Length: 95
Image 1 (cartoon, helix red, strand yellow):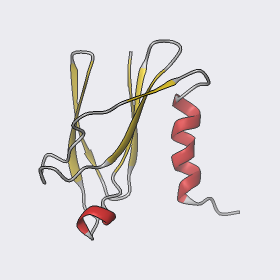
Image 2 (tube, helix red, strand yellow; image 1 turned 90 degrees about the horizontal axis):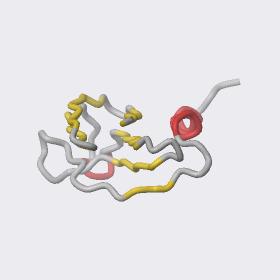
Image 3 (tube, one colour; image 1 turned 180 degrees about the horizontal axis):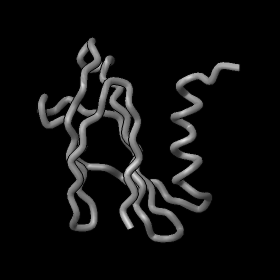
């Protein structure tokens, strides 16, 4: 049995976004190397009052090629800088 990439993507939501979570809007999740080319991302507020951000570097539809990008995520007065490899998905939890 071979697991498809979507299996792992759904796993991020299943593991970090519990029932009762509410989807939030996101502003300015931008690849800092390319200006306005955005990566895909969504955020949720959990019943425990945590903010969960799930992001994926699936930029093929924007740039016609995949590449690593650098991202800055700000939430609740904190800033996280991270690199995302091609087709990588990351989950960030703010307590």
